[in-house]
Image (tube, helix red, strand yellow):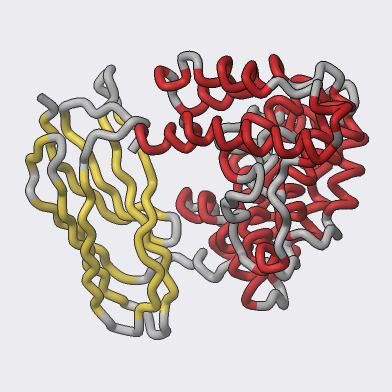
Length: 387
């Protein structure tokens, strides 16, 4: 999988980008062509490229752009813009990333181009932000815009407020995605981690956006805020959920997913999931001894002792053994059900314990807990053997 991922920035992509930039240079006229060194770019970008992993390839290609594009950002920016893939009206109707195009710069090559804009454009922020607006409509500028928000916060947030009304869904999504405090693969915006309030007017506007693509980004942004400021997110949800339509309610629910899994009482209450479960819970698992790569199966049985229906959020927690013998919990999404009076419901889940890049497993006694509306009500153990 990693091999295929890094090849999204492979030699063929580099050569295609060189061709698009060459065509863009010609469009600008003979006087500008001397500012673009195609062969310098290809030689620098391809040298050692295949030994590098994905992010390293993006930074490497950005360095090749620095070596070959005009040294003045004011000259490099229009050259890049002249090489971009044309926009199509149907691109703005899809709730997803801009499509790849063979007619100009688009797709993953925009990542290193955005890095070039960061390196050369921070001292010309107005012009750089204008270029990022164009780039994000061909892929995404969510990583590139973050240094501008750090270096030029007044200009950056003033621009984002204007972009909340932009006709492009990709630009509107950039407003939310680019300002996320903890964007994956992006540098953390520490000022927004400490105080997320500058993003509130942006999210307030965009949570009603007609595009699901934009609203999904807003939900992820709010989920980021909830990791550092759970009570702030709880305030937000309680303020907006009353009278919310299906789309806004779905956004708020997705924004609250981490706090729902952690059993945050105010968040659970906002979605009608905060009531104490009235009934009994039993939990069984098999086998009780597995090896790395195997799957453990567990069964939850719930019996209602209530006279009225109960809406229940049922998640499970796996306590993984660490190197020091202690355990660390990881919450996994289970089920949301309505249990009728006197009803018994059995739920089953298979949980694989397979090697993954983000976790190292250790031998020892692991525990599975089942939590109902945020409260742990049953647990069971199994032993993992790691060769």
